[in-house]
Image 1 (cartoon, rainbow, N blue to C red):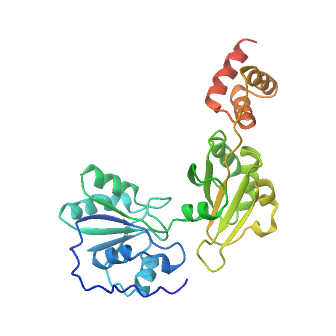
Image 2 (image 1 turned 135 degrees about the horizontal axis):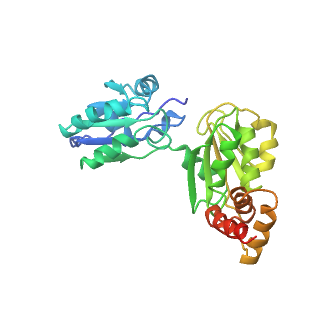
Image 3 (image 1 turned 60 degrees about the horizontal axis):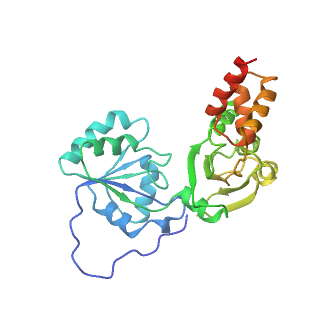
Length: 292
């Protein structure tokens, strides 16, 4: 990690008191210099910091000389801790929520707490900053005017392919998180389900070994550099081409698929091929099957 730069303020104007509420604070995804002045100010002046992992948070706080009480708030602690934290917020506490890296709630804990705070009309204040999703979109060279972030893919191939089918008809750039050991298999499944679209694999963003490898999904799946790489990985996939299919085209494709498999599987096959919603194709497949 790069050493943080000097963040002392040059002005001598008195600071306004930090307002009560829950502060959702984005932290660096690798480079410590990416922590914003505003995030530093909140972390220094809040009453309590809630962290996904207190050890990770301690490294960040120590780098900036911040001494503050830190308590664990992760997926396992959410249910038992949320009510307690809400009571503290009602009493006027100023609480900062951080994840291990990036923006809380984006594939990280915090959703239940923010939802509970909103339900009680308590103030929730975003402190924006680093995000692996946005960093990958910025460097991937793919369309960014419309994108969908889908988080981590399932670990098993069958479940992963079924998961990916949900996105086959979406005309937007798709963003996934993935782990190194299953990256090559995941890229192959993406090519099989979504088609051989242009894509990019971004690894270790903002860190020493930051890389962004661009190519088609099939080419990326076969790239030896992506055979179980280490580090945090973001996969960005360009939108598929707009499908232009008539009703006759759909019926012919479904009729052919129905000769080999049942309505559900036939609908899934045609959905992938034509980029159309599986739900509508399944209803049509049932009609065609019933008319035989």
